Image 1 (spheres, rainbow, N blue to C red):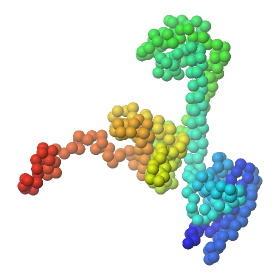
Image 2 (tube, rainbow, N blue to C red):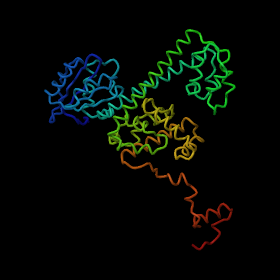
Image 3 (tube, rainbow, N blue to C red):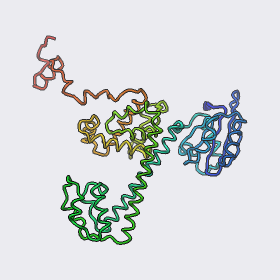
Image 4 (cartoon, one colour):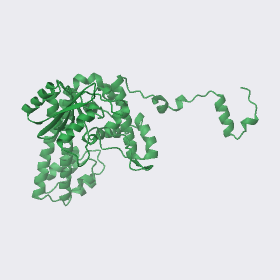
Length: 418
């Protein structure tokens, strides 16, 4: 039985850094015989416009290509206004090993696209894509700052400064002031150090012990100074990114600002979430598809009736850590809805799996809140938060029978007038 043809005029493209191989497949509606037209183009802008004209000459309005790195974006930018461009993950259209060339790959994508056998990737609208680029740039800057902080602490360790072991945050105001004084003076003055310590600090004596006998060599001093300069520069860049994110997200605020009602999600976190999933939830078939797309669903890996690893996938490298941090934040409030959920799951599954479960619940809540515009109000909120308030004190037949059973009375030997 022949497969159903969904698209009678479509294009498949095999995309590389310097070359694009495009195949247009035109199928006769009566005979279902497909005629293929193939051509290669470079990735220069002049050739991309020639690709666009070539597609229009065949009256082709739909094209599908692999989401290979960033190479698809210049093509998408030029074709977007007149051609419906679809993306697919390369692993879902991989050809058979040994029979793989650029031309065959292009034709294979065209055939799969023609029969609608490809699951397409999510492409957010232009304003969301722009928001996403800045959000991901901010993420990279935060990672760079963390790396620089680790180098700074390594220099402290090498210089026999154990400050990181006695203060909660080696980059707090107290620790920063102490390190500034240590960097200036060759011999530390205990009285000066004590004045720099915050009054609520509990380990004042240990702080002095962690500094006695330190020795900052010239190479470590140079690294410490440059690390501080780099971290200060990164802080300014991160602040600039956050200001730009708020500015760009402001026109969209009515669609998502109410998700900050969920404890643990700040205004910035809400913007970062929206930069990844957008504000149009109709792009996802259901909340389960969104959860799977982000990478919070257990994988299926079963063979011969034996289940292997079912750990969550590596998808959602930007959104998954963010939601995990939001989950860690919300469980700090002992009266919150998600903290009580976390406590119940932790008893059975442990801390890590409980945090992933809470992050998944938060994502499902965000999906429905953006989709419907409703406020945060889970269906089991009242019964879960106030279980005693929902207990009925009225005596029912069911409760009476259960009480008699628990008391060891044979209810079948008693005639009960109901």
